Image 1 (cartoon, rainbow, N blue to C red):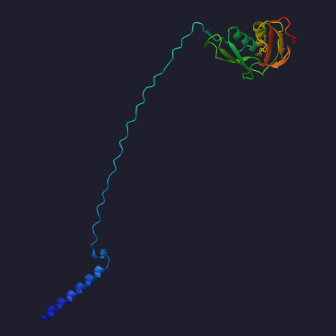
Image 2 (spheres, rainbow, N blue to C red; image 1 turned 120 degrees about the vertical axis):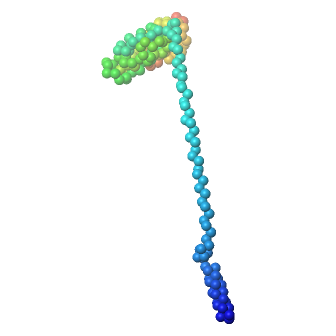
Image 3 (tube, one colour; image 1 turned 90 degrees about the vertical axis):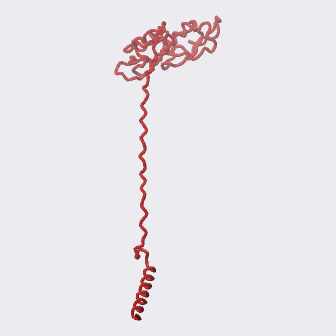
Length: 207
C-alpha cells in the first residue's frame, strides 16, 4: 500500500514537471496551434463591358449650287501669254492678279494655271489669278498726259501692268502730271500717281 502511494506521488511529480517544461516552451511544441483561419477569397466581379455605341450615320449636307442668271464660265486661259489672258479677263469685268515665277516648262510669260479653273461659274467683278512662267517683267509708265483721268488714263496704266497709287489732286479732269514720269521703267504691278485737274493750265506737265 505504501509502495503504491509512493508510485502515485512519483508519477504526479513527473507529470507536473513535464507539463511545466512544455508550458515554458513554444506553443507550437504543444501541438496546440490554432487552426489557421480559413482564407476567404472574394472573386472580383468582371466589369460588364459597355456596349459600343453605334455611330449615327452622317448625313451628307450638299448645298445645291444655283447658277445666278448673270454668271458665266471661267474661260480657258492656260497656254496663253499673260498680257493676252489678262486683257480677256479684264474685258469680262474681272480683277486679274498675275503671279510670276511659276514652274511649268513653258516659255516665259505663259499662263500655266488659273484660279478658278476653266468652266467654273464666276461673276463680273470677281478676282481671278493667273500663274505665269518666267520672272517678273519690267514695264514702262505709259503716256497718259492730257487724257481723261478716270477713263482713258487709268485704263492705260492698268493695261501696262501698273497700279494707281492715288490721285493727289483729285480724279476729275485730265492728267497733267505723272509720278514716276512717263517712260520710267518699273517692275510689274508697281504704283504710279496721277495728277488731274479740270483747269486748262493747272501746273507744269511732267513728261
